[in-house]
Picture 1 (cartoon, rainbow, N blue to C red):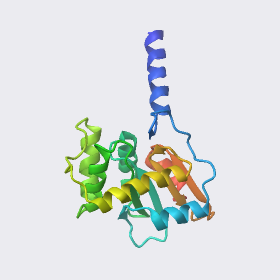
Picture 2 (picture 1 turned 30 degrees about the vertical axis):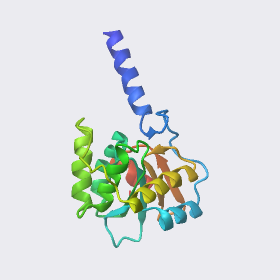
Picture 3 (picture 1 turned 90 degrees about the horizontal axis):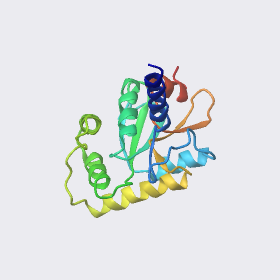
Length: 192
């Protein structure tokens, strides 16, 4: 019994430490250092993504994500209850160009991004690999997704999901690398 409890504790600790996907698959730091207002402004000006949530909200939250990242899928699910309070801009990157890039392009072109992203993330979390996407991606989208991936690196982050927002109470830029539960996300965003 003691061995089973110890094994369960180790598995739980490992699962909690792996809350983000990275190019190297090493656990990510919880918060990226050196994220500033200029970083937020750069993401706002150059990141290519799709907007969901309260589109007229004064608060915009940027999420850099890889379509093949299960942690990003968990963050998507956690963000849905907050869609009525803030505007989220989901900015796809591609750590795995063969799979991530076509899915990112399909998400960027979706007529209904919420419906498409929800179906994609459910498929990913159920072990089905996410949505089927065409292998041919328009050149402008390839360039945009590669620029998004480079943008992630310029922020000093190397894992996703990567959240960047301004806390409305303090005005400070906040960030987080990794998935979060809804309550923790709301707290980070100053919504609680």
